[in-house]
Length: 193
Image (tube, rainbow, N blue to C red; front, side):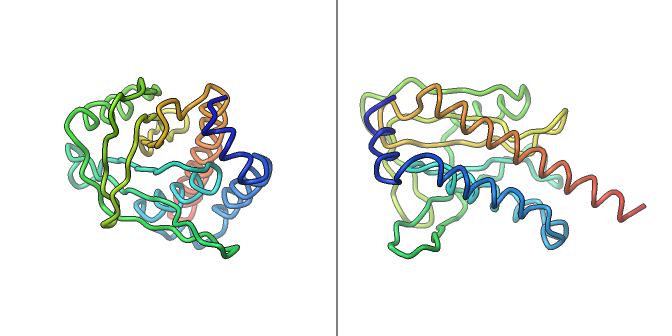
């Protein structure tokens, strides 16, 4: 486990509370109010759940709009550090460079994960007027069955920010989120029929 991940887990007490928070939030997606939300709002909630379940990352969710399927829409999110018990999220549209956009397209099309090699120099991303420094990233699909809902781009400030167990854990969260989104789609179809 990279020292940064161990430090994040030590600061948060352990990984169990974060798993518990994330699973509670995933279960809440079955509430009726989420069935009436737009896709973007649902994806934003998925990003917030990922932030609850992980620590130290910036999350960008990329998806194709149905009205303009050739264009990626990217929502960037970060957890604003606060001392209160209730987490505060900051989100906003994000411009992604061409290389990352190609990789996001590949994940959306092929539904396969990409974990970057660490960068020797820091890179920067702007989310809601906040400049975020990152040294590594991972792109994972948020999907269920044959439906890919989003490509999830995680940025880490650490060169080796994604250990194999951390990626496995995040992929598990994404499987649960994909199933929750699929269930919402099915419930919507049943109410229309």
